[in-house]
Amino acid sequence: MGEAVMFPLTFDHHESNSIIPENMNGNDDSWFEEVIDDDLKWSFALNSVLHKVISEYQDIVLLDTKHFGKALVIDGKMQSAESDEFIYHECLIHPPLLSHPNPKAVFIMGGGEGSTAREALKHKSIEKVVMCDIDQEVVAFCREHLTANKEAFCNKKLDLVINDAKIELEERKEKFDIIVGDLADPVEGGPCYQLYTKSFYQEILKPKLNPNGIFVTQAGPAGVFTHQEVFSSIYNTIKQVFKYVVAYTAHVPSFADEWGWVMASDAPFCIEEGEIDKKIRETIKGELLYLDGASFCSLTVLNKMVSSTLKSETHVYTEDNARFIHGQGVGKKLNL
Image (cartoon, rainbow, N blue to C red; front, side, top):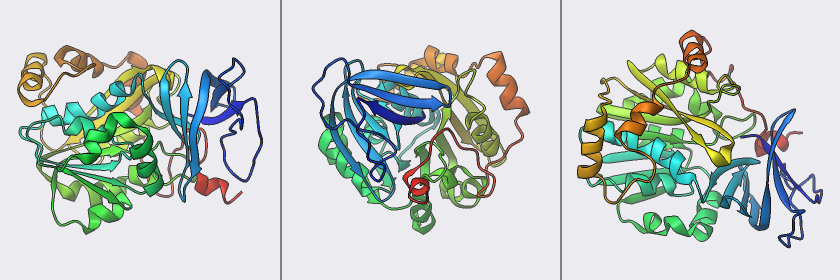
């Protein structure tokens, strides 16, 4: 998503790219406004700003919205909302874990809010989930304020690490069945864009996968008007590194757009409705709210425009030739 302002406005240019109203009383004048593009905005009414902080890496805000409940906003971009975060996180986690014959070890890059770990820990076969987030402030912030994930943070199978995911993967000796990219969108000056590059995938990430291992990443907006921002490029970059690559999309209401994910492996995927439903019944504790066999198969069927773009995309992410979505991270702002 794009950068954010809020109104009524209180300006503090030194503090944040998001403009936060100092006095919130839940009246009709209190709105969150996200600038998706130069001529496009998305806004919704607020009850209050619950918390805000600027870490070394990111601008973090927790909002209480009237329509979507609690919403986590980082660097002015919606990360998840209480009412529909299950769509994003089920789509991120369950397709790769259900596609793997026997997933036991998962490494999550990012995921500081805890929802991705929560979904991974629903799988009975899982023995260890490493969640590596660079930002201690985000993790502490989410542990305190996002009560839905308290059980996940307390689970003995969770190994919580505060570090750069690139460094952590390089230094770890063990390999993983699933590696998950639950990273912030690539924005100029943000902390994550180098983790979308071909060199990272090829030289650091892929060697840390076990045989039959699967990599999955969130891949940004994937709508008719937005899929060429980063989605098609992330897909094409991953295609340079893995033999089998599957792109899929779903509508996330609080993102005001279709969202994209890319799943990849050197072993072929078997995406069959009946088999997925069988594995959900046998391997997952509890019920999924969004995904079943039929719905996942349908998510992999892209519309003609998006499909054509993915086939013709030539851009490959490198450190010197990256694409960014609208907005900028704290690192960029501090250099202004």
